Length: 366
Ligand SMILES: [Zn+2]
Image (cartoon, rainbow, N blue to C red; front, side, top):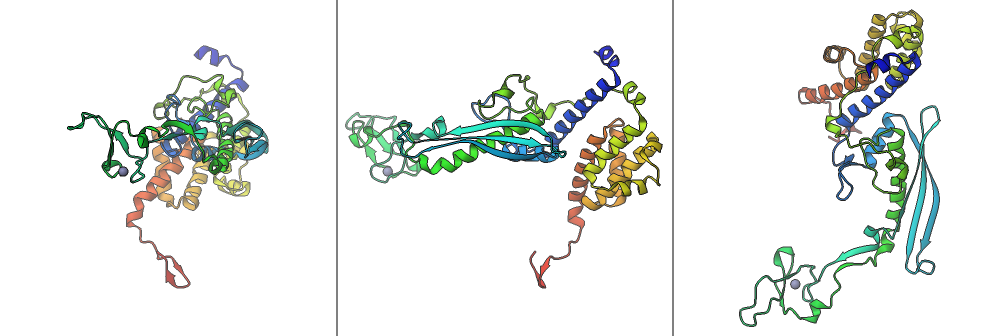
């Protein structure tokens, strides 16, 4: 395996490292920014892989700078059931994700219709003829006088304790279990929104190449399903080491520096003029490795100060800490770790900081 990589041409190594950076970014982001149960979670009947929820998909889209646009491909609304024998609603959307340069990086079609099990049916429960609570239970015990195992209205489920004979038609005539959902008209908007959500989440999974980590909620998105890898547990997903040496050393140092600077200022929102000033007027072609690292540190410290509100000293300490923990950390991961440590440092500071009262028109609104 190592030998095979060593024989790759420079460009091959760059591609491998690019993929590794992408993977590491995603892993780090999922471990530190996505919350189980809110951004993703396991759903009964959907296997072991967690499902990516819409909030998580939105965060990943932001991380990679992706913008979505939705196109409605189909909308069937048969309110009367004239066309389909019973009321039927079906929506289909295509979500297109573009990167910062405006290139399409993923497309995914999502749909949802009212004949899906969870919309078409509801689970009916027996209702108490006296109090109306859905709390009717079958008794475990025989009645002392009649020997009949009847029904009772369970008080702990909100019922009234009424008792009924086992053959009481008021109870036995009630439909039970899966019954048609007569309130489907309340859910048309939900079904429409659901199809948009599926298209969006599916396209984010495709764009971020995240299908190792997430299942999709719905079988419609077969393009992803086709080559799923075995599940990887997000919490234990390993960071991959970049392929060292050879390829990149041989690469034009100036170009390498330019790429690194572009990556950093894409996040820290510095201008090239600011970069040049921090680099003491040197151009990317003139910077050696040590000077590059110092430049990156300066950019991050400035970013930490402006964006994350940590002092220069704290930002400097955090960077030193991260670099000593992971001497070969990629710029990408350095940015993510740094941002995360800044917010941790800030939340530790909060109790000791005296915040000025927020006032509107002289009145405190705190
Ligand atoms: Zn009752």
